[in-house]
Length: 457
Image (cartoon, rainbow, N blue to C red):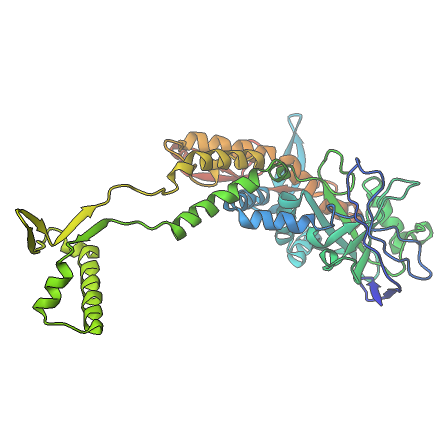
């Protein structure tokens, strides 16, 4: 038996096998890919969940790709932290000299209480990370028991999220499915929630609240107080889940190539044997040594040979013996005199992996390019003379932070929906504080900014 339920624990029970359909979110496919979700008795029909990836495991693959690559991990951390900036603050917008000015304000008690009770900056950090990795983020808006205000803002993990197939009549995606069993096949435990439509969002929330019970839509699920707000950036050919642009690194094969470089170096370290000396013994060396020590048995001869090799290796491998003398005997072969022990120094170096530095530099730059982050902002670039000066680093930092402004605005959308529904003051807005880098002659290395020239917090 499969269990489908609402946030309040009301059972939505479905029986029977649920097949897993191997199609996915791509306009080039002939049919919409779905994982069938049975419709519970007495409820409006549920369409299938759209598969995220051709086996519904693309989010897991993306996490594994980031985990295996240090440059991707560093770039993801850098971009998500840059999105977060110095946190969200409420601001008051005023018009001065035909320009909008934003001034921090903390004199709205209901807004301050909401920020304190919902850990808004923690929610925003989670949203920024999901948006950076998956290019999709999901938030949950939860009404109070009286359904008169939105009292809770929650982050919903994109990894566990799937979207319902769009309504063929309206083109609207109506439900969000949350489960931790997607990669196991067909899930048996799913949390079903209504999605807030992109258009007329506040009207939809009011219709589904106690403020306007007469206008409740046919798709309203009785007793639900939880609604999902998806945040998705534009994506070509993927109408349900936005495709992360950095996935071109995997599609092009560069991610596979960069993983082969450390494997090659690891194989060299594990399998290459570095020899420094070749020790040659005269054919009469052991005969002379055994005769001097009056050794006749095979066991004693073997023990003497083992001890000699051990002492010789210890002497040659110990760097404290550098500069000392080594005394050995010589043998006469007729008119020719030969050394009992001869040392030949081996100078040929085996492959060290240094020949891959140019390839590592190339692939590191391509990975950073695919992530939209200059490699010098997240660590030293491979190769020689690749460092940049402070002015260049500061300008690159400012440029990247500026390019992330539209993403920040999209991630702040749930807060503006809450503002409208809860009827917070009209002049209230939300801004993410930037970290504005300056030159040292300005008296400090950085200052906090609201992303608008001349405004400091």
